[in-house]
Image (cartoon, rainbow, N blue to C red):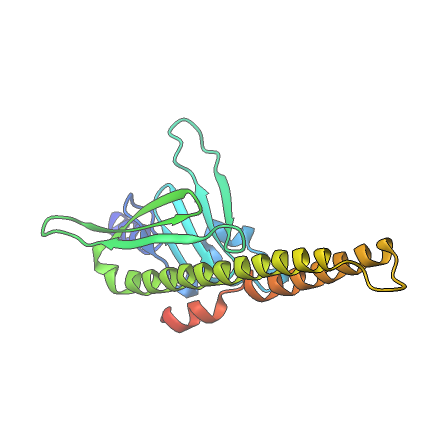
Length: 208
C-alpha cells in the first residue's frame, strides 16, 4: 500500500524522470519557489518538475533548478530574465503511440532547452507553448522598434552636429544639450520597449 501512495506522490510532484506539470496549489512546495523575488511582485505561472530538474516560469524569468549531476546532490540554479534573454525557436514534439512523453523545446538567447513532459498533460503544455511563443514575438518587435529608435537618434545627432551650434551657444553647452537629449530619448525608448514583466501574456494563455 505504501508503494502505491509513494507512486502517487511521485507522479503528483514530478519526481519521476519524465517531467510533470505542477498544479498552482503546489507552487509553494517546489524548490524554485525559494528563488522567486516575491518582494518585487514576481509570480510563478507554470512549473515542470522531474526527478532531477525544475523549470519555473515566472512573469520575469525562467528559472532552471538543475540537479542532473550523478555524483553530487548539489543543485545549480540558473535564472534567465526575459529582459536579457529573448525567447525563440518554440515548438512542441508530440508523442508517438508508444511514447510516454512529449517535448517542449525553446531557446533563451543562445541557450537551448528540451523538456520531456508526461504526454497526458499535453493540453496544459500547449498553454505554455502559446505563452512562450507570444513572449518571443513581443520581444522580437520590441527589439526592432528599439533599434529603429537608436538609428533615428544617430541620424538626428549627425544632422544636428553638421548644422553647427546656435548663435550665443558655446560648444560645451551644445554638446551638453545633445548628450542630455540622447540620454533622455534612449531611456524613454528602453522603458517602452525593454519589457520585463510578462504577467499579461501568461494570464492570457495559461489556464489556472
